Image (cartoon, rainbow, N blue to C red):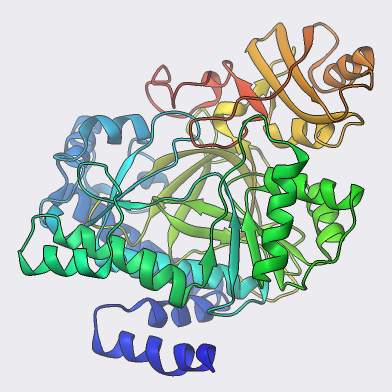
Length: 497
């Protein structure tokens, strides 16, 4: 009854009688996935040109960048012209926030503030206009729809972080109904941001999204910590389990060793990290549920998601974003070629993201899908900052390293660190401290990926330190810079150690 009322009364009524149009946009997104590709391409191009023109007219950061590059929106007639616009980085947005990156025709006191996770460096403060929030909500619903899940299905999120709404000073305090009303009636300068904190935590998460968030794993986690997640699944009985792939893989390994009865769920949604086919298959076998992969970010919403027929490849939400796969030369990559993922958000006007280096590498695929959606497929191979190089100079994405060693016998967790082209540090946490690892076999596996002429130092450690976001970066690299496509490659994405 609750789900029926939400889907058939509350959300449609909100879309009709208020500015909360996410339900309408969700319906549009579902339909657009099946539209002829050429019709959708024309719509996307029109949205792209509108947001570029808006940014040039209203955002000092973009106007200065484009003037320096000698190009204006009027000069853009095709995709090749669009690629003349400079690629922007998180570091630049962080440096020029807030004055120069927030649209001057969008008063910041009415915006939703939040922080990115900062997986590979300092977090990025974000602002979202209200329409942008509606579209991001629709993108999340569309992602679950592709999985075969429904609005208000209960969700357990096993992840080290969550983009949280915050105040303009970066703080994210608890805001209950009484406190929000006090701030609203007193016309507090942060009353709008307090509204977003209150609505998201006390209405959206609990009543609409029906979500629960167990705490993240500590760096020196034990089987008891993983068991706590299993017990939470048994108590909450979620219809969707969403989370960091490494967390779900560790839970699956525990279930393999200690079989127990789990409540049935509709799907496992892997997000905020890469997964291999073997990982997805193993997780699915242990949880007795279909496993899906999603891609996005706090800045962009859910911009790609897999379906039951796509074998881990993800359908790009082309109404939400314009994704380019760009080589370090600045040229467009070919189908199936590893490239930098450069994203333009098509619905973000308060703080635009145009030709934004999201920090990931991946591939696009033009093959059709049995689900009959006409949206393009993509795959994410890992963080750009986690690219390591072989002795021949070929880039090796983190997904390949994870695929080779995550289920290695006797290994609980690992971290592969490349400080230069000749040296690899390989840290290993043993699954059983009493069992001796075959170090030479591990070195042989690394050399099969990177070549024989490389020095490898294998170290047994008690734990792997997680990143500032709480995520485990299983691969870390200081050799990724040559593969970037920004004009000034020496602007780092973040602190890679």
